[in-house]
Image 1 (cartoon, rainbow, N blue to C red):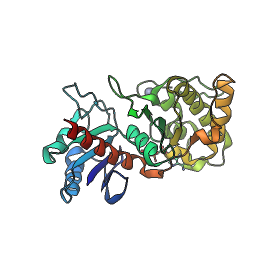
Image 2: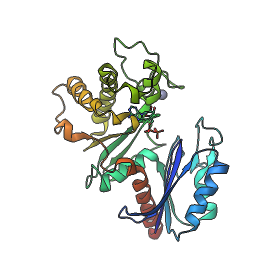
Image 3: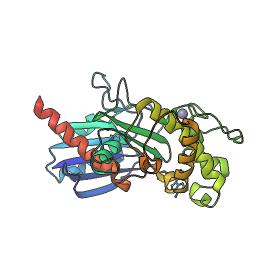
Image 4: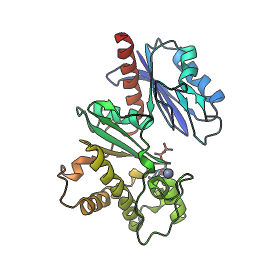
Length: 290
Ligand code: ADP
Ligand code: ZN
């Protein structure tokens, strides 16, 4: 039996299940402070004989095994979580292998194993929600280097008619600052869910997302791109993404039919938690090798 944690900025999803992605029990816990949230997480897993735990976490996190702060949540503005030893706190109670990656890397793994990119050794998973983040599987491995990628914060070219200054506290008008849910709300004055009929909103959204996809495609050449997160519930964004991506890339790169190449998550809201189970499975396999 494997344990899985999808640690998000608003809620934690905890589950137990197996390496086939079958979930036998799960709970949701609101994300408040570590002192309040994590004991509830620990109580949940105490009921089960978990052999390993996989964690897909909001970030930024320290995923560098060589680092003294490996397993920490690092520079988040979320009260209480900054420089917090997340993996260590779980490990204090459960002496089992723990896999630790970003939430989006976990989701990429879930989608590549059981979802829209099933069977592929390469896929890019992007969430457009409260923030923008992406995880990527390259030749079967989740991409990380010195740290994990932060693909939501790339620079984008402003639309000539867009005067919105951008909402990223670090970069202003980076991709996340221009195109995440809070930027849409700030630019148009109401929440995205209430802007469904306003075509210009989603065209602009497609314009920024297509720029980002262009960079990701040129650099990573993923075999499949999965676009999830709350904002992507506005399905009309996809057609604008296809249109602008074709325009931006020109004839230069040959790609599959865009409507099959850039898709919604096959696992729906379960991509992250399923991927976290698989991170647990990978951690278990690693520890057996040692
Ligand atoms: P999180 O990123 O916090 O995990 P979500 O992926 O649900 O959560 O993203 C939340 C963001 O997505 C909010 O900014 C919200 O306004 C926006 N959002 C959620 N649902 C919709 C929708 N149907 N249409 C447009 N925007 C939405
Ligand atoms: Zn930024």
